Length: 591
Image (cartoon, rainbow, N blue to C red; front, top):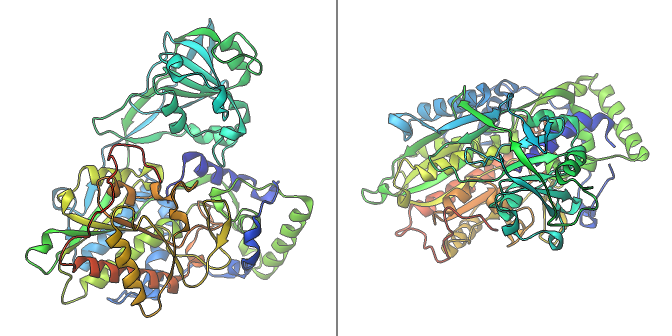
């Protein structure tokens, strides 16, 4: 599941600090009924002998597939890396073996995205008021894409405090200027010290030449190193103008304003910028590709319509500084139960003693094997579980003599973690007529959900945990009441029905899940969707998201239900009725 970049980095940072973790445990009273985590799972083996897959949806099949797809050799399947290429080619080889029809580019299973890599031009710099400022030392530049405005000639203006809306200047007063903002933790984004929601700030000051947040001093060194990595972006001939974006030190902010950043008044002007940093663009080394395949329907007319089934094939890669696997697992399962959704923990001395005691016990029983250095974000649940589930469902339908009336379109999207890139590209450049897709069923993180997993949080902020029979549904009635009702009806007819959890689908939910996975790119075009997930957990966007912690029996139940629902939708005499307002396909997603 996609998270904001700052949240991904927060997850990386936790790896660097888990062995010496130091933050207050924060638990919600509603977590009191949660099952205590069992650390015996750290004794589970990391290897699995593959067995031939079958036409039935089984836990054994899923285990075979996931131990391959989420293996360390896939290097975390990060977009535009050799690991992602390997994962994508595994999926393509499987659908070819199963006999699905290729629906990608030029008769292949692959749909390639037009992606480029962008990084800071090391020869560029920022000059203002007769002074030169150095990237990564005085300021941290953030790429805003090919439409990023230059700041040359822009006057500096103090815009107020981000996090205190009453202090902000009118956006019109920032037009064409470099607006410097004081930082308040109230305006910070979750997980990143000093970080803000860039998209939100950029929308507010949409006509500014540049935006500078005076919080660079708060960024740990590891974050700065991560931000120096190249950024991948889609080039689609539509590069909207955006302000340049910087995090600057308080000293630099005061110099730009010719006044103390802590006491200057909103609207005060400062020096002018004479030279601004520039990002340069190059082709990516490894291709970014969706996998697209199809099982034709049995009805001569309805086969020209499609029920789309999807997941995302990428994850977040690796870290250059390994951490002890067992240490991170124990710390997070006790004190960071939302994984990268939560801030890195700082343990009290009592809590650290508890962790050390548990580590000593598990290392004794595993002969030290549990302490293995770990740096790969395997993404077994996110979204290895969805990807192999789509393969399992594809084999299930491929093995049937009589196919559903409508065709089934399987899409494994790339780049979900970086910004829903693959699903955006596919829905903007569909390989079938867009209006022939009658529904999209998205699976993202469908392999967990135990009573020990912190699977969600209510709109009011109450955390809750999973149970053996629950399944989260998001968006099921946001466009089509009928599709949501069908999901309920099919579930009731299952041998072992789920209890549906809609809490994360609440309007205005702070986690904004509806906007954070590939289904939304279909929904923005008015295609009814359902997002299926077993929710979050302490291993979300951590190196501990590995195949041995997946509940394969539960995942098989989810997959059978999704397959049964797909059958029901594909056999309807009419397409699911869209009875809700369609969003602006190029507007901002709002849950």
